[in-house]
Image 1 (tube, protein in one colour):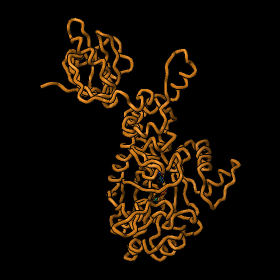
Image 2 (cartoon, rainbow, N blue to C red):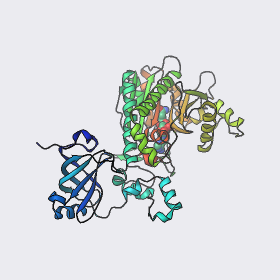
Image 3 (tube, rainbow, N blue to C red):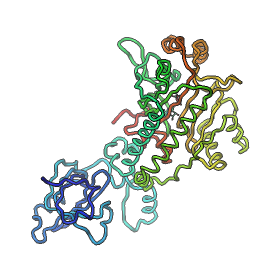
Image 4 (tube, rainbow, N blue to C red):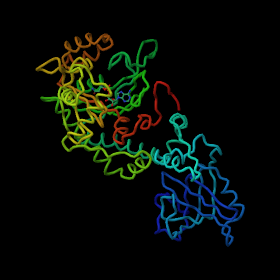
Amino acid sequence: GRKWVAVRLLDTGMKGQTVLVRGRVHTVRGTGKMAFLVVREAGCTVQCVLSVAENIVSKGMVKYVNKISKESIVDVEGIVSVPEKPIEGTSQKVEIQARKVYCISKAAAQLPLNLEDAARSERDFEKAEKDPQQGVQFVRVGQDTRLNNRVLDLRTPANQAIFRIQSQVSTLFRQFLLAEDFVELHTPKLLAGASEGGSSVFKLDYKGQPACLAQSPQLHKQMGICADFGRVFEIGPVFRAENSFTHRHLCEFTGLDFEMEIKEHYFEVLDVLEAVFVAIFDGINEKCVKHLEAINAQYPFEPLQYLRKTLRLTFAEGVKLLKEAGIIVDPMADFNTETERELGRIVKEKFKTDFYVLHRYPAAIRPFYTMPCWDDSRYSNSFDVFIRGEEIISGAQRVHDPELLTKRAIECGIEVNTLSTYIDSFRWGAVPHGGAGVGLERVVMLFCALNNIRKTSLFPRDPQRLAP
Ligand code: 4AD
């Protein structure tokens, strides 16, 4: 049979062999007698040469290939050869002396965005602007153009890398927790009431009954604990009817959630969480070297600094660090985006880490299900986790006493009747437990120091976007 080879596997050892490759037309240029066709597959590229010399291919074939539109899918049959020096702009060390080219799917001649420009870094644009003599006309591709034509946009090397890293993050999360005796559950996304408070909930009609989309797996992952699963996790969609248009809020994102029995202290949850994240960061740095390079080429960033033993600060210590830097905040109110960033900078300088935990938050700024501290109920057994001064995780020990839970829900203005089946779960004996929720898109965004969460969401949903 004929020998199909993936572009990434083409190498000098195949010299002289006849191969078949399938990929996209990355670029094509030529003259009447020659055509140089660069074929791209899964981010790898190879140059295919067509030449009328010695009647290798016909003039008609060269003409035909020169006209194939960029991004079309082609099959190329030819002989592997090794050029004296590597062909600039291609990833493989070999060329293909093409005999036959078949276009099996034609791309529109006019694409809504230029993929070469879409892959350029800000540095490229700055260089071109400084040196207009070069005569290169680069056009910045705006975010809306990218997102409106996301399928094309996703074909750039940096975007390919971002989503391969995202896949690694959820894989590493899953593998680590499975090895620690967690069980993966799938909780319902259609709920009778809000789990995280009323304002950011998508309401819907459930066969005549008011309902909403799950704002988190919070209630049902806890009910999984009440059902004796001991340690549970979930990777699934989370819906938030956010109103504000920010760089880090989506209306739908992917939550990595876990919940576990606690024997003595909510630090047991933090122990698991920190170990998971060190494993994720190590795993990405080890397994995704090429992907990190591809992202860096377009969006340069400082590698994430993290400690083997994650830094834990109390909320009060955070307030104090800010105060020492001349920033006075209300010690019982939540930080805002700016103070969080500022604290991130202070921590980085002082402790040499981009990744840290802040715990023992004031109870009044945490959800109703959060366990107050036993020694001072103004505070709670809760935490947030930050990368580069931005929140990626929040978690806590939960209230497992049904009376206290009811009281807290009422105090927080939550409609208790929509929570009755949840609260009832704690009336049949409930172990102390806690857990956390991670925003997957935020983890990837902040690991790579990207400036917008839309870059790490495959098809982002924000207050103004429901398509593609
Ligand atoms: O802080 P949140 O709202 O906490 C919960 O949902 C709790 N049930 C978690 C728990 O187990 N106690 O959301 C958790 C994480 C945030 O830290 C953030 O990373 C991400 O989810 N997140 C968002 N990501 C993108 N867009 C949004 N609108 C987000 N809201 C929260």
